Image (cartoon, rainbow, N blue to C red; front, side, top):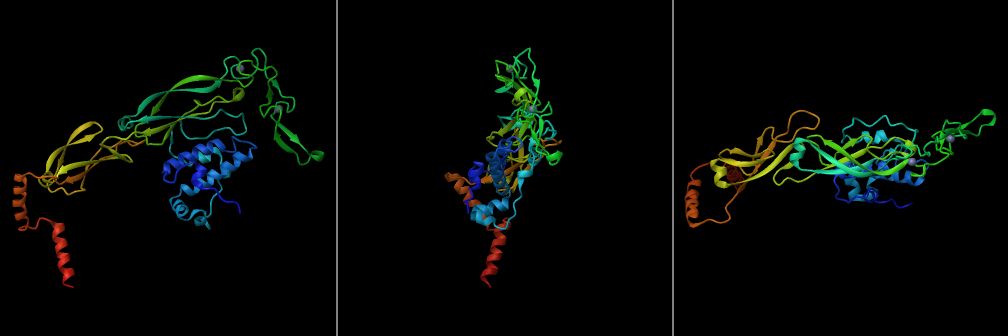
Length: 373
Ligand SMILES: [Zn+2]
Ligand SMILES: [Zn+2]
């Protein structure tokens, strides 16, 4: 029995990789090795199947944990789907994290091979995520040749109708007496129906040349780390004037010095002294808009959270904003001076006389009943 390859290795990711990163790794590989893009290429086909299988296991938390613990052995009896029948659109519909330009679809199959999709990325601060932002991207791409306008034919000459297929792009083979005919893509023109007789000198008949391109990408407010904006038609030009691919602009969100993102909400840890938490205080909290005053009520306990409404991030594609949660971290003084020690000693004397420590009280009550069993 052939030894199965490690799923992490197949996707080119580490064992600690997050679910989102696994998704991205798979998407990249699926785009590269998809059969629609690699006709009659068994090697690409095998790679596509392998990465699809790896993705199916690693994208499912239960299957992943089984695989992590027991390897391939752990997946015995677990049925795996066969992704290899899925078209591009199906694969991309698995990823609801692709924004902009509407949904995937309408991609002609069997027509001229469109140009490759390209990827770029931008890094945003949390403040930029809150407001949405426009960025300019500069990159080099295969574009249509200026000399022949992408046709690949020498200017003044015209591509001729293919004689092999009479322009249909398909040829019929076999067939005894007209039965059992097989239709194949025409080998002479590659399905285009036209052949270039005199090639453009500048692009040697490919119809393409490298050009510098500048585009502006609008990143919507509330975008999440790892999501992408699709810029339709900003990828590479196809050969012989075939349509352009798309450009995907991936978003990476930088860490904020105070605010941690949790979906559309933000979390902030706020250290306060134990006297402040006992007596109550007004403190300053960092928000996306700057510093705000926050009332910490008397008797706030360590780990209590205070919710500040609508101070989170905008909800992507919806109205409204998340909230900011301030988590109180009560800090005990590391060092006391003589006067403070004296004050706290006096305070300790008063502690015994009242019942203002519900947790301590309940602990002592439990302890008493435990000992008297
Ligand atoms: Zn040309
Ligand atoms: Zn032909």
